Length: 555
Image (cartoon, rainbow, N blue to C red; front, side, top):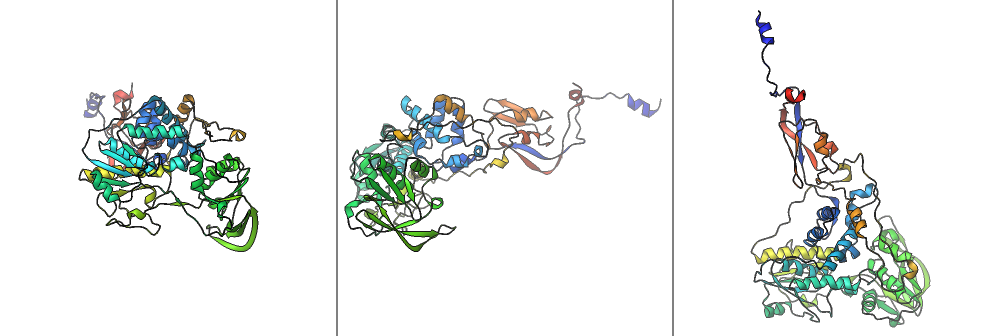
């Protein structure tokens, strides 16, 4: 018998794997990317994480994740301008997830159930917060959670700042505001009302405070020089909103003109209608495309019968006659006078031209620097030039909104806590952002956005809340619309798609692992992952991969 014939009869090991035929140039890696909703949130909420709890019906878990960043979910669910929804990838499909409405539902549920958070053991450190607005209250909450003793000094008669005096009750009911402020006090924060601060260093020495956070709101209205023969006909928008919030009814007359194009102007106009004005007109020197107010705010005002006079600048007011000059605008938003004038009729004029902060009492503090607009200059750690004196919110150069102020208060608390402990807080590295084009959605279920019920226009005669909330079923539905962009939610698509059985399920909440000795880099798992929680990482050099054993192949 020849040697060749003897070789044919050689026993074969069916369990051997040989690196033949397949060369892998890349392999899959599970990743944790930044969802656009999280990235857009000025308060820095982990929106996707609490939505994951919400879609499972774990409302308390969602509330806990939420309040780790934002202690006022019921407030934010009503007044935040929700940039998270503008960034939501589902907006490219059948409409963005109604994040603010879910947040409102969870916030209201937390208030009804009396949920609260645990406080760390006392540190023995004392912090003074000046101002009980959104930034000050947020900082106080986060400092108290960390175990510090916090006192807030508030110049006004009640806590809340501009949330109470500048946001009308039809947008933010006062019982909701009061409940969320009370939760800050329940953590042990002491709020001292009717206590204006005139000497911050003296207050710090008298109270023995280790650090101070300045959270002064922008409560001084900006004015322009408009000749007016009857000053009694002219009123500041903040004064109007403050009076209305206290149950007063300023004498506005039947026809009210509001000068300005921001959100305060929209609120002032809608408030004037509720106080009895039959005609409320907003006069603004630019057009609708270049107004600072959020588009939905202007739309709601228009729905309630507010009229708009665009490209108009007020030059004079004599009695009930308002003289405006028509303006021209280019595609960059720059306006120029035309020399053409028009006369309008109004019984009163409300100025809504923005707000500024009163920082005169800080001018003598050593080390402080001021920007040209009067705001305080702070470092990356939110500390001023005076050691131990931090500042944030409207008193610093920043976007002025409740959500942004709450986020700044949180960051200030982190920096103050680190400073008190002799360290420095650094923001964690940002994960790469996942876009809509990164997702793999060959098939998805249509699920239209749940709509909030609104009070009919004809019934909006008082300050009752206009926008209704979601039911539990609607909140569950809406949370389930989240695409979990950039993060694995264990759908098992990768596990089912792998032709080499290289992916192992690790158990609920633990994700998957990849056996690289079996993976051929075919990209099936990557292409089947709907949320782009898998990246293909190039190999430093081609890798030979063993295919299935013969015993596996014949099963």
